[in-house]
Structure formats: structure tokens, C-alpha cells
Image (cartoon, rainbow, N blue to C red; front, side, top):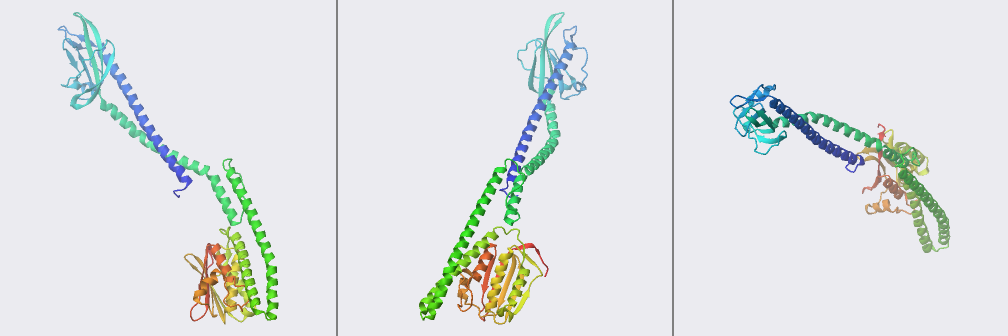
Length: 459
């Protein structure tokens, strides 16, 4: 797809938005999971505090005692990451879980309200970070009320590891979801833009001559475009038809006066007024050339607009023109050599191709002495149609004039000298070109390059 493609732009926007949305969703999910784990951990720490508080006692010597050990085996494993500590600030008495080994939790000296739990982040064994939850409880004893601080701590890395594991587990499902959403977006773009593809095909059919208007069921969003295109086609047809009629009327209106002028020039010549007669005849021929060429251009331009799907067999047209010229007085005495494939399809209208080949071959038959060689071959750009005659040729400095302006080099030959000019117009209209050559030893060749279709016959 081109970088100017609407599909590509929409797909890129979809990919970026889906990726960004799922990335943010992953961050939010991991954050929510981490908060959930923290709540669960805090709930477990509070439960452990309540269990410890229910089994705290005092020995005969006044020291703090614990009647049972907690069930979680991590409290008995040194440096396991789960710890408890019971201490009395007034007496300095302290009990610790075996997991603390020789480490003492540095509980802060903040004021605690009885029965209210506090949470801290403290340094733990081995430089670890601990989440500590503590509570102040007042006990009755034989010696009077005693205030005890009970703290339970867990390594913060436990929470971080759980969050990292969750992020790792959720990564692949989110990646699969992203692929699915991108595929759905691509399908949606393809399905949503199908009407525009239908419009493109309709326009192509119009250009190829297979259709006249955009027809078919189109979505409401596309119908304004379809209506505008159809109205534009209607306006174009009206303009072309009007221009064609005007050109035809002008040509017919001018041909009759030109014919009268030519007739009058002949009368003047018979009366001996040759100078003015030749001047009138020359002006009449020039005007006739211009009229014929402009009419030919109009016809070619109208058909070349829809050339994409036009297919005409060049070899069939060439053989047909050659057969016709062989029956003419001038062409019947010539030797004709035609070489090329059995069939050669080109994207040129059949009538235009007949005009092109006919003008070239007719011009060659006028000037050839004994033979005309016709060849059709393929090159990298398409098909090359070449006609070579053994006539007198043309001066090299006048070749461009023949191709561009239709100048006649010999007024004795019949015609108005516009044949090669029309050939150049037809070839240019269809994306081809014309090359004229005349070697010093004589002879004249015309080579025309034409666009070729995919189907070409075998030699």
C-alpha cells in the first residue's frame, strides 16, 4: 500500500490506538493487582496480630510470654521474609519470631492509639524493605495494666514479585488481544471502504467503455460522491457532444467554400493568372489540412480517453490494409513483405488503429519504387510497428516538419499532406510515439511504438 493510502492511514491509526490502549490497560491492571495483593497482605498481617494478641501472657517474673507458636512455618524459618515482634516500651521486654534471628525491628516511636493498627515501611534483615503492621494493646496483669506493641512484618519484595508475575502472565493474553483487535480493525476498514472500491471499478468501466454511469447500491455516505460523478459525466458528455457538433458543422461550412476557391483557382490558372491561382490553391490546401487534422484530433481524443480496456489486433489491421492497397493501381505493382506474430493485441481503438496503419502504409505506397517492408515486434515498452519503403526519402532537416505539421514535400502527389501528422496525433493520444528516418542512400521508414495488452500472440 502506498503511503497516501486511506486504508494504510486508518490501519496505522488503529494499530497505534489499540497498542496504546492495551499498554495503558496493562499498567492499570498491574496497579490494581498490586493494590489487591497489598490489601490481602494487610489482612493477613492483621489476622496474625490478632492471633498473637490472643496468646500473649506474663511470666511470674513479669516478662512477656507467648503460649503458642503461630501456624505459618515461615515464622520459624530464619530470614524467611515473614516476622513478628512483641515488645513493651516501658520495661524493654521483647519477644521475636525465630525468622528474625538476631535482628530487631526498628519500630518507630510514634504515638499509637489503643486498638488502632498502623502501617510502616521499615528496613529489614539483609537490607530488605519490610511492610510492617503494628498495634498497641493494653493488658491487665497482677501488677496492673501493661501496654504491649505487637508488630508483624513481611518482605515488600513478596508483593513486588506477585505483581511482576501477574504482569508476565497477562502480557501474552494482551498481545493476543491486540492482534485480534488489529485484525478486526483491518477487516472493518476493508469492509467499510468496499463501496469506494466499487466506485473505482465503476469509474474504470466508464473509462473502458463498458459502462456509462455509476450504478448499483451504495451506502448513504457514498451516494453524494456517486451523484456528483454521474452529474459530471453527464456534463462532460453534453460538452463533448456539443463540441463535436460544432466542429463538424464548422468543417462542413468551410469545406464547401474551400472547394469553390480551389475551383476558382483552376479557372484563374486556365485564364493565365497563375500567380494568384497558385496562391489561392496553396491557402485552400493549408486550411483544408488544418480542418482535417483538428477533426482527426477530436475523434482520437474522444476514444483515447477510454483506452484502458480497448484491445485490437494490430496484425489483423495491418494485413487488412495491405490487402486493400495491393488492389490499388499504385500498390498492386509493389512487393509487400509483412513480418510479425500471428496476433498482436494493442490498447488502441480499432478505428484509430486503422487510420494509423492506413496513413502510414498509404504514404509508403505513394513513394515506394518497388517494395515495402512491414514489421511488428515487441520491445520493453510495448509493440513497435515499422514500415520501410525504397522511395526517394526526405531531407533529414525536414523530418520533424513532416511529423509535426504535416507539410507535403511534393505537391504533385495527391492528398493534403496530413497523413503523418494524424499518425503522430493518434500515437501520442494512446501514450505511444513516432520515429521518422530517411537514410542518405534513399528510402523512408516510420516506426510507431504502441501500448500492448498482456495477451500477445506467438510468432
